[in-house]
Length: 304
Image (cartoon, rainbow, N blue to C red; front, side, top):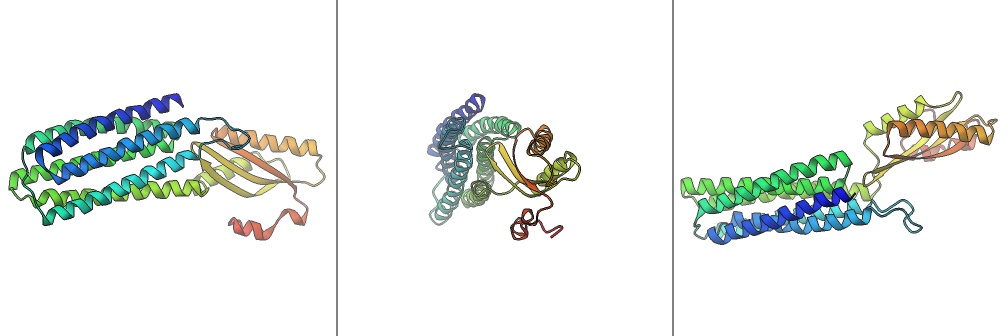
């Protein structure tokens, strides 16, 4: 986890560099596109600091008041970051539209564009580092930060393109039109991050393909005469959780049923190391074990 926090500090450093260079470029040129780009980088800085502290909090071990750990704060952090991205995108589009009706002369476009390109290259490198690490460590915070930086990269590319077209054609409204398009793109990125974080906070089930793989692993290790149902899944940060009912013959001893449950649990965790497994044992030959209404709520209708 310390390595992840160091990576977020790299994001903080990139954001500070970008805010400084893009703000200077805006002051030089007066470009609304560069203003929007500097605003996006400022949001990046705030989001990276938030991500750093959320990773510190999520690394705390489980305690009596948080028996399942503290990883869910990662969804809150990425959701707030997504909201900031969304607001920055809307703000960019709004400011660009107002500048369409009140245009201002642009100056020193070459120098401003060169400064923006240099800052963008730094963002691109850091974003790719964070994205690879986020996928490797299954950290939604790092992935959100990486996508946020990539949104900034695309913002900058659009702004530089707009400045180039203004320089070539002399048609200054292009600067604002490009900024509007970039703002809407950034808004879409932010909305996607908010949706993903909302799903995590609401204990959204794992993707269907992962659930099918878990079910296959359970079936592979079921003892003779046993079955299972009522499987539920969720995720908190990088940790995944599954619980289900293991149905065993009613005449099995407690010791034998416990051993069977451990065999299934060990087999599933060997295939899915990030998965925490909870098993509830029930007699397969008891009517009360089948709970048809509960199984229908979970979408399990086979055999009912």
